[in-house]
Length: 297
Ligand code: CLF
Ligand code: SF4
Image 1: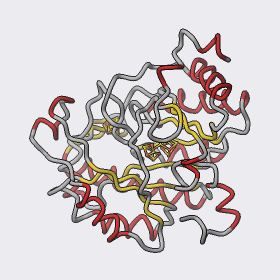
Image 2: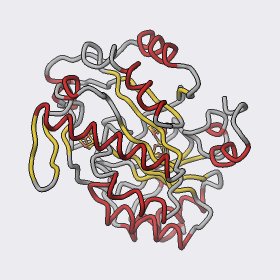
Image 3: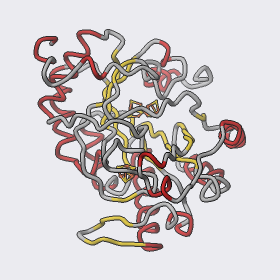
Image 4: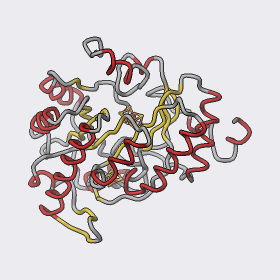
């Protein structure tokens, strides 16, 4: 619960449905799918679907330009008065598409200054973008951090693309880890509220995530959201094809309980799609297509 938080922090989360468990009963979020590309490969991802950073593999999102995204925000705000937050969470990585993501935020800022801006990233491109995130007033950033040990990371990430080169194996995982920690520290220093998402992958990082929890807590992360791997062979992910299972609800809860401490654990995540619209757990995205948003807004 956020009851024990200082007032100035409560003011920043009281209307954010992900950062406050209470808020998700009263406030809505929407994602604009302006970020198609990605700079890493996760073994739980299928690029044909939405980014598993934040989203449940499902139907391919309608890709939006920044201009269409801003129009869609106005259309949704006109129909859903509880709308408080707009996030960029895929279908690829928000910061691997930084120009589109930031242009989208600028347009939303101009058209609807009261809406909170939120972004989700794998963290690889975070350090060089912290200044711009801060300058645009993006107050909430989620980093997906699945490991702090490159040996574990090499089983999750077959490659990353960094400084014009593809890197593989331990080198890739080590670079990703260093960039994630640096980005987290820089955001905290800039007074941005950071949520860490971790995907729990039995036999790979399940027993390692308590250490991840310690590492992100000690660096000032505000909230930790441990999510279950969704591994379905039908979605064609690497883990789906190798028969990697996801955790049971009891295994997930036991890990969340073990990590519960000074830092809050998020327990109400609904693993939204990259174009989700509405209250958490509700998806009204189909009501707002690029064909009809002009008529609504
Ligand atoms: Fe979207 Fe993510 Fe912002 Fe929320 S979702 S970018 S922090 S506004 Fe929320 Fe959805 Fe879970 Fe994400 S319930 S998947 S935690
Ligand atoms: Fe897929 Fe997201 Fe991982 Fe990129 S960061 S590979 S889009 S799950």
